[in-house]
Figure (cartoon, rainbow, N blue to C red):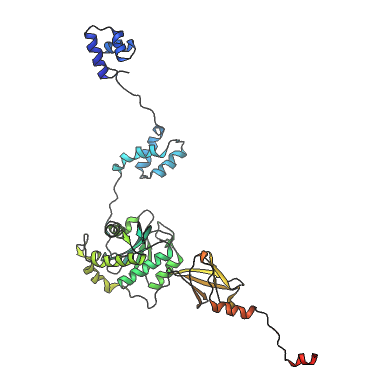
Length: 392
């Protein structure tokens, strides 16, 4: 197929009287191509026929779902596939994307809480250098609803025990407890979410709430904006603290810098919504906080083990000794976030070990073995020397 430039050559040569076959040879095309170009007086139009899409037959159904408020492409894909659609997800997404501007906006009314009423909790994560290695850092952010003062703590896990530890550390940082704590629907706090306002909370989270005297609250599913104050703080930390500090000597160094940054940067800031300095507004909220309990809540892992007959229990791939009297009995095990393993019989602490890698071998306390040997060594009968004298 010739282009506009080719036709210009054809027209110029034809006007000079060059034969069409010679023009064709010059352009390396068939003579009929030259002849047709001269008849139409131009290069051919490149009109490509549009190919049909597998989605065409289902666009009306997609539009219907959109009008009903269903904007989740995965849900729409499931619906039209049930009706016979054999196309892919990308085609559907390309069709929906330009229509999103037509989606009715859901205006959010800002909800302001009274002093001491609510603390919002959420997790964030980043990758930074700790002790010369790139590590994923999880950080829990707990923000007071009234004053906007917040606290965050960094660690290597976002499981239940670290969630509870983060909450306790924030209570201690604020010097008191709010009436309620609003969380997202992560499994560490909420076992089953609910749209009716009656979620099923994790048993230990309920225990923590009872110990500190706050009411647990959970966001409704897909309504994370309910705790938007806290989620904004997650972004604030990422784009401020973790931009300023990128390398840390240790986890302790990381959290030390975090608290320093909170006091020097976050607390003295002018909060944009309430137009007040956070630290000053907190002073009005602080008297409304409930007092901390006299004894700190134990956030360590809680597990149970059956002591073997050789006087050891197995924990995370290694074995740890227990008093000989507990052989064959069930014991309570608490594993602190600092790596301290504590073993209890009922409420009594009977042994403590430092967690060890399985390659380091079993952990044995000498007093446990000496006690075991007393029970297991054979008893030797003692005789008076007079017995042997009689034999002689």
